[in-house]
Image (cartoon, rainbow, N blue to C red; front, top):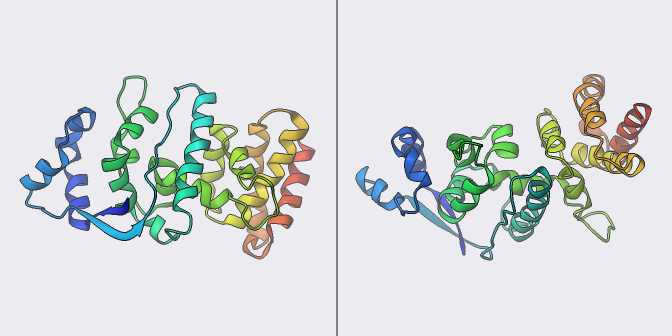
Length: 249
């Protein structure tokens, strides 16, 4: 399929009329064309010349283990198939991810992100902004691409380049704690931290979420205040983070 984007005008109208349209998201009816006809927008979706395979996203259930496994598989599906097709600049565009959520992956978004009352935070999961948290954690599709982009180890001689992706998704809390940090879009820092966490998990036999949170919240932010993290390699970050987390065992 060709990668789709909402037009800027379409996205603006759809977002400002969210309250009016909210219940339509839970309907099986195709309502977007009628809605855009009603507001006088005929070309609400723009197709690029970039083609990607048609992919499906999995949803197994609502337990933490199922979510972790599903997210890992879906990250592989999205980033693996879009890798080399879109750039980080492209992936920072809310118009891309919102169109995918509304048109191609609506059912997945509704299943994966339903709350106990059956509703979804539509403004977070179907829409996006250019903000870091929106792209990395909230939008249902962009979070999958960025998780892959930040963790895929193509440059390392690994038999499994997804090993850090698996570490990231070993617990939902790990992804949240990491992506809450100001350095979370720095691939070098992310990879160094996850390599260190992978080693800690091997030692402890568990996800080590508390240790990792302390490393992210306290140590790395403090270290970043006195050292320019951008000048350190992933191997150097790994050594620093592993030394800190090992002391907490």
